[in-house]
Length: 305
Image (cartoon, rainbow, N blue to C red; front, side, top):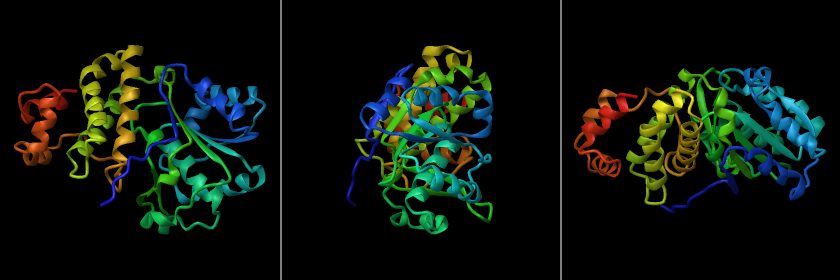
């Protein structure tokens, strides 16, 4: 099978990098109209406001869309079509976690092809068009999924079932991993995000499709979770930066390994995973890379988070 490492065109990853990243939209891409996509909670909390302000300072007109549920539904996306048609953005900026960024990705595809059958596109990625009408920029405000670097959009179909779009056409032109956005996360949110990074990264590493082009990033992500979670939960900015970057590494990796991401999976490792992988060569290799004597010791450290 042909292998390729597909990544966003440009990845920014330093605290305070958001203004620098967005400057490109005016200075290089000459954007004039931006559709800012976020979720209602982030909008009400003002988390997305600095992004909108930065765009307006560059004399980029901004329209906002935040009518999405806990899981982005096909109906949510269809409700944005009139605004897309009227406003005609030349850049779509997703700000938030996996939900908001998934919405931004799906809207990019619908903007290019308003009649796109999302259910069919979820079943056949070849149906997802390359967008020539607008650029995509993703700004991550938490460190759970690394969606700013992945080709997945997690959605809910018209039957209320989870589904996902996957295509290299959903990778952003610019991804932004600015740890300043993580300052408002609660201790419980920080812990939950860390466990999600660990679960995505560890399962991707143990997947047979993982290659030497991705296992290094995944090892770094897992090591960061094991080392820095306790400090991130206590609010340490440096630790939260480490985990924000870890999520970005995981997102950049698993999109090149797995064909589908299932939401709300149990945290790694489950009892079944412990039983299956206890004597697995790939698992032993990961444990050794992380400095553990064996798989069992690594599992114990993961379960202690």
